[in-house]
Picture 1 (cartoon, rainbow, N blue to C red):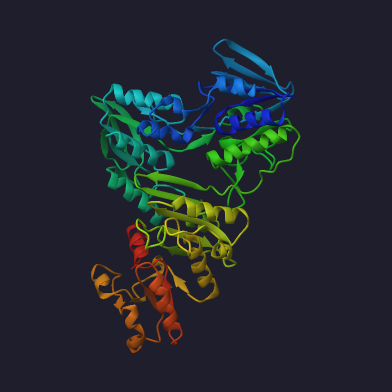
Picture 2 (cartoon, rainbow, N blue to C red):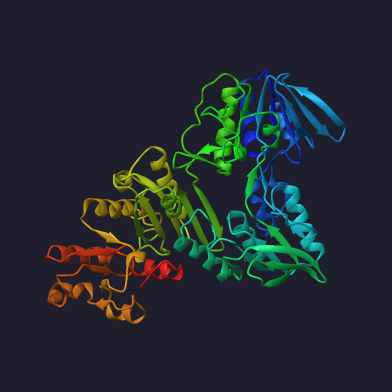
Length: 543
């Protein structure tokens, strides 16, 4: 069998190497229009920041390695520009000219291209491949760049901003949306913005880039709010779009969102053409078609495509949950599944829980606090989770992601059996704690309201200590410390709902239990004063 693969990197290279492991006799050809067939796409920002020192380390597998070890015919600088489905041939444009190559099975893994929205010119870069990265690095060195604009506040934008700063460059990051990092909700995204600002970045949200022009001393940037700034270099991180021109030209069916439509076995509308990676439309966490350009899913899709090209039936039809993580100086932030914006848009009713557990046992030195958020349904179904902190962040999201992938609920989170020793975890792990909180909400043991629900009419009882309250609190709240609450119940109204607040929600829960068992209508403020502050800064509160 002769298999032609269009594109390398995660999907194409993983497909090709597994094909060889499954079938020693197959003829395998990879066409890659760039000069590198398999490279560390996600590592590109870290080369700019100097964390990855050698450009050779960006190459995961060279053409020579793939030829020698796997007997794969790798042809770089060779762009497939057409597909003749009837003749089973592709048209290839290379430095030596244009020619046709036949195939028995074709696998499309061309990836996704960077969006630019018409912004371009000398000193303006995207970060799609190794060549882009090396060119950006050379431009910074040769022009002694001191200032940079980063347009876009997603993964690449945040990561390249951090790494430019680490290189000693002053960075302005502009994001057109009201927040950075679309996978997160506003109050969690604030933590990412805070980390960038603490690192030295000028972070501007609700501010897009309207124009980039050549100035006397570099670039003149005009923002959508009418302001201007100078920059020595500009990096566009405005998102990506699937590279579907080849498939569309051949009449291969596309999904409504623009990606190549595949079934659960990576087959396209043509039985002899498969597709994988950033170019395809997948089933998202909500059960609908989505574009999720992440390396993990691309690798798994490439593996499945390889098996199925050879007649297998390896399913890759489960929802892609979008588990992802970003590093911002000393902060790590991670998420999986849907956020509130997505749930609201879909009209899904949901509940949420916040928790602020320590990364490991508090009595063992070095513990730091995590910020966790869980979104779940009436029956305990898990819709999504978000986390931020200094360490062990992605560990929590990884565990929740697996539980979600296996169809588990918040009850499974509460009962998850996870490793424990004081240097690594707590006996009640952060995942367990989120599960416990969600169970308490669902059972009615701890009715809960959220910071955005508070109004000027809400009766708020703050059960923190007087010293804590002196450092700040919810406007108009009545303070009765938790340890004094049982003796001061006569100071509270029985004809009004009492919203109990504390620092992060734990003492609020204890206060709710005391009050409800004494005849009061009491509810807990989820996440306490800490979440109230975040939501207030994000413009989510009314009080």
